[in-house]
Image (tube, rainbow, N blue to C red; front, side, top):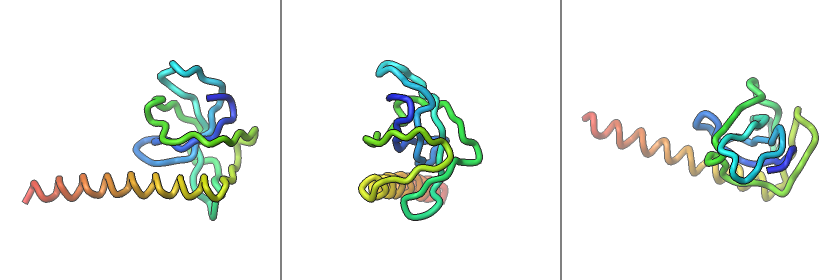
Length: 106
């Protein structure tokens, strides 16, 4: 990932938009990133905790978008739909885990 590359990743078990803080080699296990939260249709603002170090295995999708800004990102319609799909997929995964866990208790 090059400096400024935008992607979707899991950050503290949440699907978020991230941006590489610096260039990373393919074999790097950890990525230094800026994190973004949804603000509106296709817009994302810097999160309250705007810096994170994530495992490279937590990357879900990399977009062909590079931007030098660190305060706001606007995704293409296709990128936004991919973000929504990944968010929904992971939310359903955790809801199903919760239901199975709750069912075992009763």
